[in-house]
Amino acid sequence: MTKQPEAGTEPIAPSPARRVSPWNVANVLTVLRLVVVPFFVVCMFVDGTGWRWAALVVFLLASLTDQLDGWLARKYGLITDFGKIADPIADKALIGAALVTLSLLDEVSWWVTGAILVREVGVTALRFAVIRHGVIPASYGGKVKTVLQIAAIALYILPGVPEPLRWAVLGAAVAVTLVTGADYVVRAVRLRKVAQKARGG
Ligand SMILES: O=P(O)(O)OC[C@H](O)CO
Image (cartoon, rainbow, N blue to C red; front, top):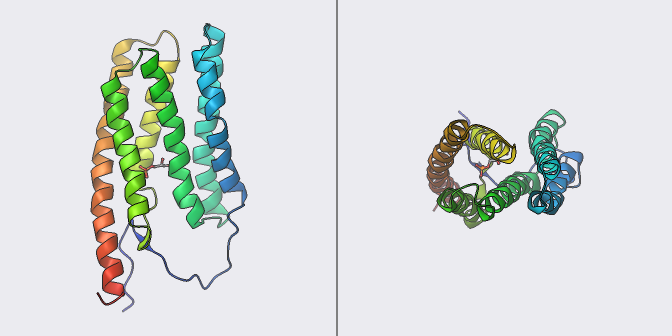
């Protein structure tokens, strides 16, 4: 019986099928998400409700590209190792910039921003630490985490949202962020073991 790779880990193997260029529409959207981050930050720091709404629109449009690039990559077979690494990094840049900005403006506690940033930077470092064994793509939990983070940040950017609603969604985002971070550590250990076994080590 053919042994299937373990879920959530993808050892690097030579692909017998067609090679997909990293310069495809899904990856271009991922890079665009990175490019709009400075525009979002500027909108946040300019005084006035209009600029708040502009920041929200930029943030939500950039977040939408996260859902769109993943969908395009799956539908048109545009999944590349570059996309698997760059997509979570682009999400982290957008989410990280939003949280740091909200903390600088005294609207989100620094401990929340710090806990989320430590997890996000840690998972990125982990991905690079095991990259010689394979790529750890975003998990289902990781995607749920990103949606919760986006919802929580949008509620903080939006003027006049009741505080209990903001706290509830942000609390859920922090919890899922930390739990999925621990899950990636388990996946990285598993990936290393699978890759070492495959090499006969
Ligand atoms: O939890 P991560 O680090 O895999 O990030 C998930 C991505 O942001 C989903 O698009």
